[in-house]
Image (tube, rainbow, N blue to C red; front, side, top):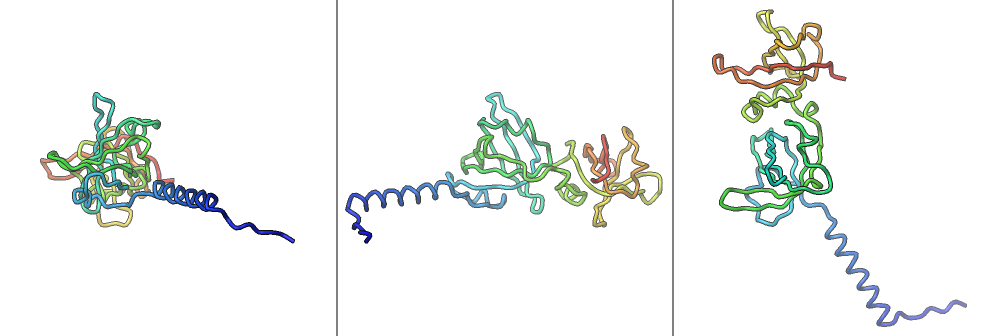
Length: 219
């Protein structure tokens, strides 16, 4: 017949310590809350958060740190991120303007505004720019991308005059003129494509132009 011993005070104490340790580890490993970019200025310093936004600016400082600006394309809000070095490479080595990034960092509020401090180990690409940037997104937020070289998706169509080309939103209703000085897009008319182009604003005509550098059909 089996005999069952009652747990001693020492055994009970060890079990309690183990349970408390497990709870602490679970608490420290839990993911921070995902917050919208528009909420960043309203959060207290020291709050750890997760952000998802489009990369619209990246600067490299002499110290080796990098400054990123993330944008919420739907609302037009932006957040500034300061990224120090970690084990992984810095974002400048693998990201492009327009990529959607996931960032985990700590809020810091001061006289110069609100910043999010992080390191390179806590930044990752959620989606590359060609999967995020549509004609509508770029048109609605053109000031964030003016002068930048971006990868954007759309359908190549002839313009109303039949003498030029436009990149049209896949769902229709929105388009941007296409400059074809460096590459011919005639054989891609009617096709959905991914173009690498520099976004310019022609102030003479108050219109956007995509100066296309490269174009491929959407896989």
